[in-house]
Image (cartoon, rainbow, N blue to C red; front, side, top):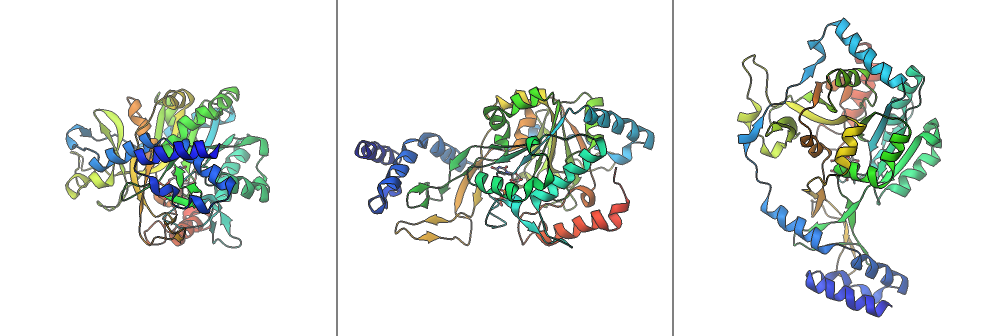
Length: 423
Ligand code: UTP
């Protein structure tokens, strides 16, 4: 059996110039040989190499079709208006029409932490808390307030699924009702090095990684999550990342505003303080809601203002999105485009030795959740206060580091910020 598979695999690798994947084959046990051959036979080389080749050409970008996306700010509303929208949102929450999806399938390469990013412990006093615990406590607070139990869906990846589930088990699901938590796995793709070659994770295993948070919709469909939402009579789904320790998973104001404005999708933004910060901002592209990547933003664009003196392209994306179930169903059948990210990934070299790169060395192909927005004519965008809602942990060198996140978390929950703006 192995010899037929070996012959087929060799031919495939020759066709795609990936023969190096079998350099260590002879030293493998029979089981591992079989594993590697199966992986090769089940890899769509055509697809991954087409993604790589297309990405080399770079994304064509023209500013000609870009216009600003309007946004709302809390200060735009009177107290009675705010209360009105909040009560619309609260009503929907109390009717148990709301679910949360936490996207925790990322690799977290910049943080370089071993294990799922959600298991990273933030050094809080009196006890450290994992990012999963922080997220869980945030949702539990809403459960308590509205006397509901919000269904919580957690997206994992092949790489971190087992470790994530055992972390929850070990921590007794942070006392969240177990039957209200569901994990689902997103898809994966091989990584490619700068020479267009797939890499090995182990001598018997091609290295693959999750294919971006934009896979969430297809994965929800394929894993029966959409069916589950329908069965539970859910009408609104909040999507957030795992690494923002001030993420507000349940915000009646956002929900109420979205319902009242007849929008199917909504997001939160924070004002981008520095014109050239490496963060994407909201815009419209050919009239449809979209995102302007920081690579495409220069000082001139960032400084553009309207006649009221308000910046046009400063609403930064914080990965906090609300969508109706209908909207999720619609985009779950759509294939979002892939983007190329350059990341640090360990690999096994031709001598069978594990190499830990100091610098990014591999291309990862990822779909982004916000690419789904262009499938809609409009969306609601609500600017929020970063001291209340934005403290992501990305790495140890930028402003998005664990120390800053800890400070912002403590200030919001226990410091001066705890006295203001908590609705
Ligand atoms: P990031 O874009 O910051 O990526 O993810 P990352 O994988 O966590 O970290 P780096 O870039 O390798 O350092 C933003 C959010 O999207 C989730 C992450 O878990 C995080 O919550 N995500 C990202 C997924 O769920 N799946 C993915 O494939 C990528």
